[in-house]
Length: 313
Image 1 (tube, rainbow, N blue to C red):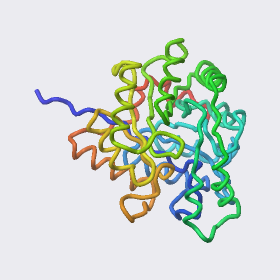
Image 2 (cartoon, one colour):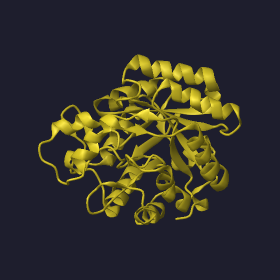
Image 3 (spheres, rainbow, N blue to C red):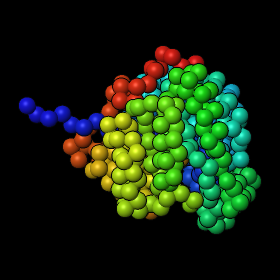
Image 4 (cartoon, rainbow, N blue to C red):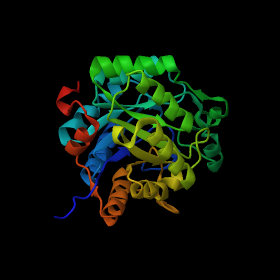
């Protein structure tokens, strides 16, 4: 009997809170564009859509639940993909601000950064001489003195408010090996239960570097801490490292995240036209490796999600 191909979850991070409108005309920031690109990414094969909101006039990241609600219902009506709402938000937002939209929407999934960290994106500002909006340059340049905060108390509060009270499960974002140990702390205390999604992130200044050896090291560390059978492993790599490290992850048994939040490019010197283009490219790689793309239903089963009928949008 033929062996069934391993199913791979594709997450698409549609807009994020890092890149700015000047960097790419493809970056969606109006509710209509976020919805359209999310739906297109789902049709291309993304079973999870990771979503931020932006001010529809300027493209600046916003935590406003009313803005989220301008695109979340439309995405739900048009796709079966899992909606994953950020709890990271944008630079300088308080925890209360970052939780406002998820608490209102009660989604199946949320992202959760597993520690405080230096988060440096100021080098990108030097690449541009003219800007579409006044906020962009200082937003980037200020990150040489910026710490993204998620203390143990913050993480515990999110696990309680969203996890226990809403049945939301998490994309645990681990930017360095210490974040895996932070997650292990909560697993050991029964606050996080398997199966859980670990998103290991490579190439952000302040986190672990985008090096193939580091991908292997993070995978080995996660296996040691949690046991391979207890978690679902995924890889996110920033910028030009996206496709090479995601391909490595696929060979190593992992899942993948693409999207314009993580990289604006499709390949060397070629900017992506939209999120779906990146999804289609990684799907081609997945299928070339004789793997199969997980459907939203399969992703829900793999991650023990509550189901799209139990959200509030």
